[in-house]
Image (tube, rainbow, N blue to C red; front, side, top):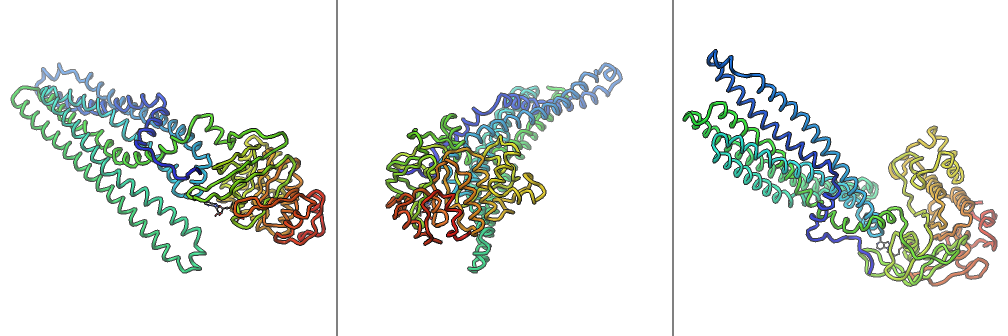
Length: 600
Ligand SMILES: Nc1ncnc2c1ncn2[C@@H]1O[C@H](COP(=O)(O)OP(=O)(O)OP(=O)(O)O)[C@@H](O)[C@H]1O
């Protein structure tokens, strides 16, 4: 069975992701939680002590004797201490909290990237890039809310409620117990309600957002085609419709938040009103002193502080749990650290090959995800050190699939692929929004500038890069914008030259290049190729004549092959575009110099 690109979300996936997040959290999360507790308790204490102090000072000021006896210093020092402590603990909570979550998310990101650096992940990304990238970034970032905006405030709210209960218990123990019970029930009810109401809406919002991104990318990148076919307005309307649906989900989330805010206000107001009434009754009856009554009232005001944070956290938790569920499939996929490292570095474990053999495929079948029919069947192919093999065949016959198998981008559904590490020049060159230097360093992070210039020189790009005036610091636009097709191809060759891999996989390396550029690219490849083995998918005569052996593939099956010097070889090469030239029987370097070739 072929690997499937869509990874099933496991049942109770949230638990898998949250466990992974918990394991990745460093110890500083405990300090962050303690600091959050200290902040809330200092806040309640500050209000309560201030209320008590102001009232007690007023009561003491009623007569000279009590005014003189009243100690103003200790309570005011306590107030300053609480105010200062609250600021310090809030700062510490932020620093420890963010440190903990950044460390944990970095570890989760590493695991996830390793899980994506597999053939299955790569195909999923290729099929639905907008959706998958959104998951990779959005879902992971949403986990921050679970830890910082939900778990930490929820844990910190417990001692804060107990403290408020204790302070209100000074009015009467029954009031203290009732406060704690009321707050606990209120907090649980509001949080559960918000989470339940927001999860579905958050899921819909995320799905609309993904669709809108994909539609916007189509709208922007396909403008010319849409304009030519008169579909530009229709696509614009589609994007607008998705935007309206997104706004509708935002409105629903706002309604959930507003309702929860109202419930929190009613809870806080009810608690305050009951405390004021209770305190007034007890003070009037002479059961408690006025300062204690005011202190309890202000403690009731302070205890509502964590509820606002908890409500916002609960609202985001709906989205975060959805993300956690979706990430679980990838986390379950990420396997052991050793395998992860190998997958990420492209070093898939492969069976050893015979000495001198750089690639071996035996009885290989391969299926693309979401496709039932195999793209190639029973492929048996060896490439030896220094041998150049051209793979020819009609469009869709399976050439790129064989290269993807050789590269390890696609896993065989039957048979065995083994061989050395390979460098690939694909049909579309992957360049990044970065400097030329960083684009090159992807291939060898330790290469110095002199080496980079040497490979640029070998690829015939050094003059063009030097002419920019910024040399290796010249910046490329997104996808290599700013370079012509030929220059981009040469930059990809320079990158390949930095890798010392013994196998080159070349997918139509000069397709869509003009003759002069193609001639230069092929010369470069030929000169730098040395004793590397080549496997080159091609439709072009100018490329195939470089090969020592030509292999023809039709409908996913190898149907013919011929070595240089045989009639089969000459016939196959001459069938190709730009063909009917004399095919020299010597090595390709000589072929390149031949006057018969079209670009000379
Ligand atoms: N991502 C994909 N998902 C499903 N099927 C695919 C995918 N890529 C290729 N195929 C199918 O696999 C078969 C072989 O395609 P492949 O790209 O290997 O052909 P090719 O010989 O390289 O074609 P070309 O010369 O046009 O590049 C085709 O039938 C194609 O439709």
